[in-house]
Image (tube, rainbow, N blue to C red; front, side, top):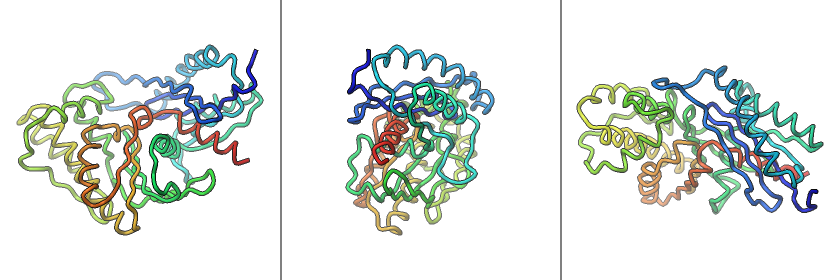
Length: 321
């Protein structure tokens, strides 16, 4: 027997490395935030889209069982899924079709409305969940993940986001650099947590930082990997991890102070798996604070890939109709 007030919204996100589902009540209480990390073979630097799609399909069977068991006394009144990476034309990745089709099927079975969003909007909404920005209608958002390093000018109107890329990496992403070093050091993929732990343990001061190329908010990062490879046998794992993350912090800092000055903004929201790094959070927040720029980092469960942002977006869209 269902309870009248037990109405929920489900959120689905099937990204390149994580199958995620979430459930939220109509008063924005998170009832479920479940995810399954896709398996990457030892020494591999990632997954092909076809491999990721196959794992997502299998994971959906496991997660659907969780939904049935946990929410048998609840009413599913809306379902929202990320259907592509970014809210722009021609943005597409096959992995998102799994969450999209599963969510569409589930919405038909439950006779509820299906809502669409994007992976990037999902990250922003999840990061906003426990951060109280002074101006949530216009701010900078940094999306740092395995495949993306973008600085976005975000303007929110009703339930939609207008997002313009105003900075970021022009080549390799932060996450790719972190994972490539981690694989060289023989860590399991994804390698972010190992590199972060190493950097936090390192008490040695950086003697000569790696060279960076930053111009008007945009970064060229591919040269960093070559510099790391030249010194990889000269230093221990902790120092190598620290010098890499320090370089990423310095590059992002240079980009952000330029962009904040250009657009007259003083608040930056961080999301994506790389933003879960405690080292990056500490060092970048302190640097930006000296320029009177507020940095908003979120808890790891909302920074890494998840379905919470999708669920919140679904609720917001439902309330707006």
